[in-house]
Structure formats: C-alpha cells, structure tokens
Image 1 (cartoon, rainbow, N blue to C red):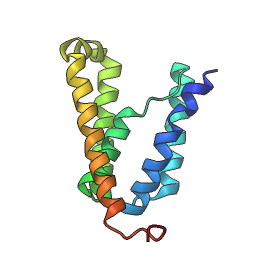
Image 2 (image 1 turned 90 degrees about the vertical axis):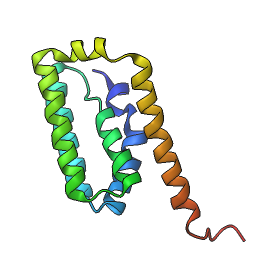
Image 3 (image 1 turned 90 degrees about the horizontal axis):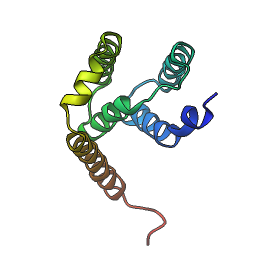
Length: 132
C-alpha cells in the first residue's frame, strides 16, 4: 500500500480547498467527500493513489481569478472528462510525447506565480494585527 503518495498531497490539497471554500463559496464537505470517493475508486481500480495536480491547477486559477462556484465545478467536470478520455483511450501517451516537458514546467511555474501574486495581495491588503 502506498501511504506516502496517498497523503503526500495533503499539504497543498487542504489549504487549497479551505481557500476555495471560503473565497469561492464551494462546499467544503462536498469537496472532501468527492475527493475521498475519487481516491478510493482510483486506488481500488489502479492500485495507486489519485494524482490531483489537474485539480491544483483549477484551484490556483479559481483562487487567483475569483471564479464562481459554478465556473469551478464546470472546469472540474471538463478536466475530469478529458483526463478520463485520455486515460481510457491511451491517448495520454501521445499527448505526453507531443508536449515538451519545458512547456509543462512553464505552465506549472506560471500557475504557481499567479497563485503567489494573489496570495501576496490577499495577505497585504488587510492590516496585520501583529505588525504595529
């Protein structure tokens, strides 16, 4: 059983869903419930934990762009459908060969920077009580 992979994303997953629940008005319980169900299904079917990097990307964009709950849900459904289609047809290997790794890393860096800029503006837009 792979426990490190199953719980390795919790350090980024939990803060993101807490922020999505508070900022984008998504239901925290529903997010945890369906993430758990998806993890169980994938773990039983593939004997490995579910990678949630696509959902991290959706969360980063939703937080930084102030997307509504409906926009976040639609993005999750669309990304889930595309990933399911790519996985079931085997086209994921074709896409993996067509898209160079530097492009993937650039997208990851861009999303990370976008989230960093948004978090900086959120922290410093309110006066901090512990700073005189």
